[in-house]
Length: 250
Image (cartoon, rainbow, N blue to C red; front, side, top):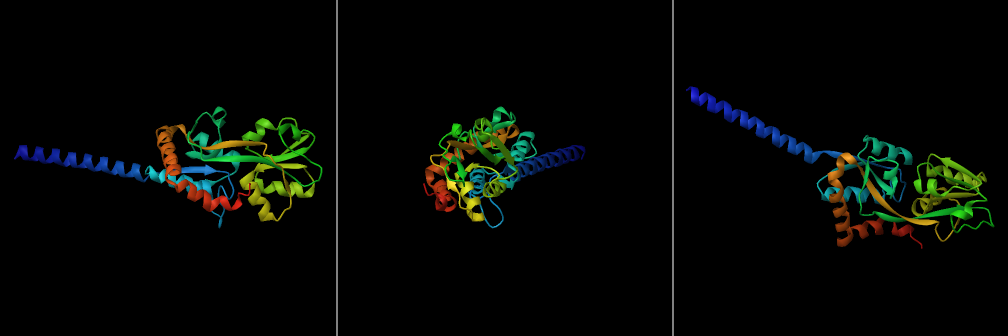
């Protein structure tokens, strides 16, 4: 009788331990990551306007068995939140932000090439490179690291909290030039019905990447592999055709 009771106790304890392991495994599988971006359509999203990068992130992470929530916050705040661990990553950044935000790890498979461009309203302005900005008052949104690094000698620089504010500055004549990327700039200007001159060629073309907080370092090669597979099997191109191709007039 005593041996049976001991045996029953051991079996019961083992069953509890197995249930705990299974439960923990299930929780790990259903855990969601919170990824942030400051991008607007057609890259990011607003109500009624889904975006390319959000759909790409959800699809890539789903392929490795991870669910994600994508939230939109101001551009600079997105980096701060991801670096601090408040969010788990930022999904649309140029290479090199890890130098300023050391808790971020770049997913090495790029998500998109982005043209950084200038818009003006006043005739007679010619912008072909960074140096051509020197005589003008220039505005761009806070958090755009490529502009922070390259716009050094403009006559005056104005920073805004979002891209939405830039066209009004140019329309009112408060600045001579506004700087955006080709995709979001085209969308914001079309939404406002503005008639601005887009300067070609672009000031620069940068590769964009996803970044994860270092606590998710193990996911980095898996996400990179999923993105590469999406490019190989045509699913990346399908998303590009749906969200970006209608605005690509180059």
